[in-house]
Amino acid sequence: MKNSLYQYLAQPTIISIEHYDIRNIINRNALNTDGYRVLYDIMARIHPALDPDATFNIPIIGEYADIHEYYLYMDSYLMHEQFAGRRYSPRDRLNLFLRGLGNKYQVAITRAKQLMDGRSANDTTVPEILELPNLPNLIEKYMEDHDGGKAIVRWMQSAPQRHHRTSDRQSVLKADSTNRMYQDIKCPLCQTYGHHQTQCDKMAIWLNLKAAFKSVDEKLRAAIIANYAKVDADRRKKKLARLKGTVRQLYNEGQFQAGEQLLENYMGECMRDIEQYAQPQELWNPSDHTLAYDSEPSDVE
Image (cartoon, rainbow, N blue to C red; front, side, top):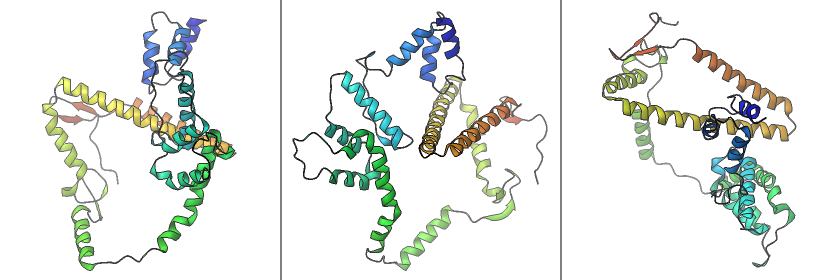
């Protein structure tokens, strides 16, 4: 059973390579192929009863896809603290949750704290509506009310802005110096419309990279590739988290077809990317620092 379980967990379709920390656990157990040991090591990373010395930072919403995912991690954090012997009262839980929301949710935070007005400082309880499981929907409702027009009304009632012709002219000149006007011509270098060949930013970047390639040794090359792989994996992880958050919200609203369609569209993009990268690509020729093609590139009209 332990061998079968290991073979199942080792499949990239079960635990993808983006989760490199989990994949490292699987690789460490490749010799004994003990699937139970793999599961134990994975759980030890997150379960406080298996690793009471593990430390976790207090979650903040900026690290998660939406407020519902933020709630799940906050709930896990409080569970870990409870196993470690640190217990939080309902009022402490409320304050921790609101503190992690940040300034973006200030309107909702203020409205939630107003529900605690009049309570004694020694009262550790909170109204039922402010209990931790109810907070995500409550904060979302407050933010929807705010985005529905209250902020616009307050802006309209403020004093009218004064315009200064001199500052306006300076801002226009500054914009013209950094932004280029669109030109309805096709650049013969990058084969895209909108600019003359002397203003081809893509070619300028390529020329700089071509010149710098000569100074890249094996150590620097390995460091660049490793750093890019980590950043790319983190970027994809965040994209997947946002996708899962959107699908979860659609499911909670009963829009199952829309959620399934979103997943199907994403899976279709992944399959197209796999097929694309499976085809022969452009090759870098380090001898003359040029790109070698199977055939000469042709203009696409």
